[in-house]
Length: 336
Ligand SMILES: CC(C)(COP(=O)([O-])OP(=O)([O-])OC[C@H]1O[C@@H](n2cnc3c(N)ncnc32)[C@H](O)[C@@H]1OP(=O)([O-])[O-])[C@@H](O)C(=O)NCCC(=O)NCCSC(=O)C[C@@](C)(O)CC(=O)[O-]
Image 1: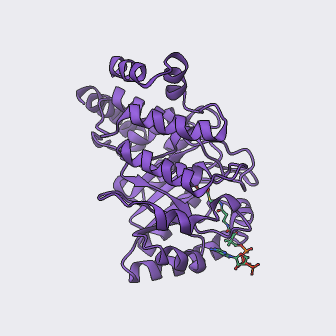
Image 2: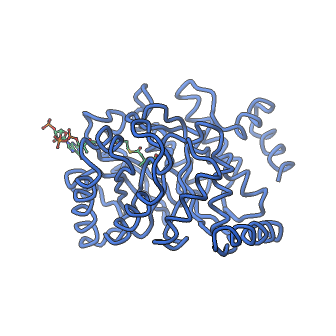
């Protein structure tokens, strides 16, 4: 804890010279797990509903409190998410756990409402090219459509989270001007989103481009209204995260086993792995209240089902060397 505080304040001082920004202390991080949605939506092999539910239960058992569990998008667009209703109706909802879902329009919202969700996420794009490919509309049309969803959800007493995707780069339009992202962030906050998650959808960001982005976005939002959502395509996820933490942002999206990617974002790969994030935060002395051993088991569960090697380096390092859970406990205890 002390080390982390001194790290943030030192880096904060450096940033304040260049960007006139004063860092806040971040001693607790809120993790927003996106594995069951962002993680699975790009998987070619259909994951049966009971496996999705078991994955969510394992993530709850590991201590995660915010788990994006499904999306109610068009099944013609993303077949993997077509069983969202069954997932949401059959998850045993644990007290104190938030199970948000992603919705693209009022039709998806109505389905979400029937499933008794407490939070929905809306997701305009940060670029015209990606908006067209992912939502079949312009950025402006997308904003109008999402405002209808936000208005209705707020009227119904639900929480609304916003995403902006392609915040650094777009596979169709190239580099993105941070001012455009700040404008969309402001529009989402004006609609009533309690938080806006900044998505580096194709994982091209670096600590430098993330800092430039945050300087603009933090002109319209407070750090506690933002979340960081990094894909790890170029291996920059953790360094980008550190750049974001320096600005006092304390909500981070991640995906179990580093699963993830968007079917409509060419070149997108997995999200920052939750196991790597938790290990990294433990190292900084930041409180996560997550059981790393149970998290590793959840990652192994879904990777085994998919027949894939985990994308989490932490999970791989531990799983490669130790094959039974007693050894994993020993190893984890040594690391921490
Ligand atoms: C927005 C649409 C629907 C427009 O798609 P469209 O084809 O323009 O819409 P439409 O209104 O013409 O509808 C086409 C058909 O889909 C149906 N439909 C329409 N809406 C729904 C719905 N909600 N639920 C169920 N069905 C729906 C509708 O009823 C119709 O069925 P038909 O009459 O042909 O039988 C489509 O483009 C879509 O679903 N896009 C979502 C794509 C997606 O899920 N992408 C991945 C998530 S975004 C992401 O991963 C990035 C993020 C958030 O993680 C951040 C980051 O990583 O950086």
